[in-house]
Image 1: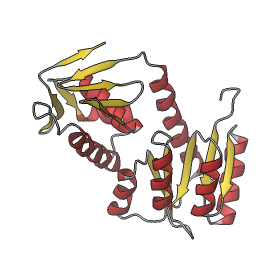
Image 2 (image 1 turned 90 degrees about the horizontal axis):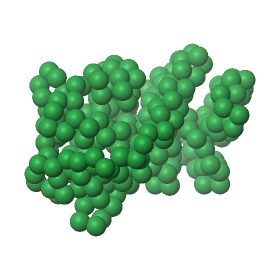
Image 3 (image 1 turned 90 degrees about the vertical axis):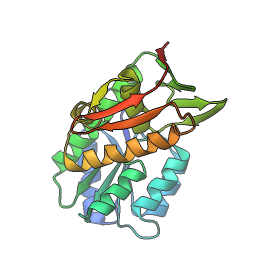
Image 4 (image 1 turned 120 degrees about the vertical axis):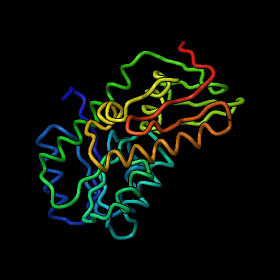
Length: 235
């Protein structure tokens, strides 16, 4: 850990589990702030700056999904991990659609949660350390460091995952971006749920790029994706 502690917002309505998780994270060198429900979590996020959020899905007053949507409206970059007793694929995919970085199904080990948190923080730190790269993708201008996508003077702020995936696609423009390479680079693990999460983000990027009909992201069956563009340039 660095000298400056990473600040984590932990929202868990199970008092015993919440206290155990908070104490465990503190012993591992994190600054963990525990809130008992979604509304309290929202107020805490509004008042403080956090480096990462861990939200239980089933909470009173405001569930984890609703809380994540509110957090995303305030900060599109802060990593979010869901804790859920649900195992339905649809619920997990809903979390990824809201911009979640990872999830853990209960029961889970605290060591696994710590591993997931450290993996996410390594990715975030690595992204921030990169040099400034600006891509011209057709008529779009993509600033990979600032996570900005501009078209006809209109700029949209991308989420961390959207930006990381578009960065890989742009770096391999008009060539195949292998699916497993992208999964292991951005999600670390190429398991089923991460693969489905990447599919969700590919769909999001297609919508963001749809205004330029000369730009497309196509599936290469059994291999991966290809960003088709008449023009791509790095600055």
